[in-house]
Image (cartoon, one colour):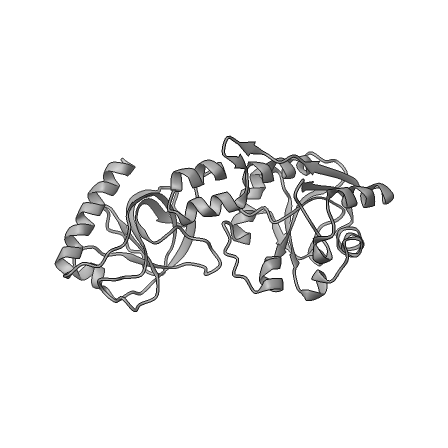
Length: 303
């Protein structure tokens, strides 16, 4: 896998694409492709961690792609390293010119910088493509500004992808991503009630920084992380209103027509389509009957 490192660990000099690149949609890929063909530096993607708005405004910013996931997605594009710049108040206080000198030139020895047309940097977001281009000319650094990519519904953006995912619209999410959305989770011990009612589930512990679809029941494909084969499954995501209304949100996967030993395994899940929203049932038998209907509908979707 490509290197995932801090600026002080990066291989130098660099041809770098600078931005959040959350989701790696078509607009992001066009910015990144510019530097992968560069002959004047090591093709590098540079992002910030945590997200600037988390530090500046205390916002929780869940990610479409966690750093390790992003690294795997960048490798086929020709990127050699993903550099995560630690974002803190000290970095946020740097002017655009100071950020250019201290981070991009001194630490990363940038020879070519590629950004999107809406990228901003430096204190109070004072830096824009025009300022970066001017600094590049002064210090003999090539600067490329990518064009905004649009479709019939507007600008391609991570916000549109997040909105589709939060609405449980996986088809739109995947169309905007240009790939299948997925997430990972470690199998942890649950209460065993699923097994008691005839529907054993793998209870997943998912990184809290990962953006998941809206709560509901989904047809999905899932597999063990080291396996090549995705298997049909039904997934429940969110609270458990029938079993324990006060329990925290859960992610549960039931493989359809397959019995697997999943203890202490890691699963990769690809939700395909939301079957229904969550609801409270009067009895566990009613819940079991509904899960049977969900399973049959999931199979019809997936096969």
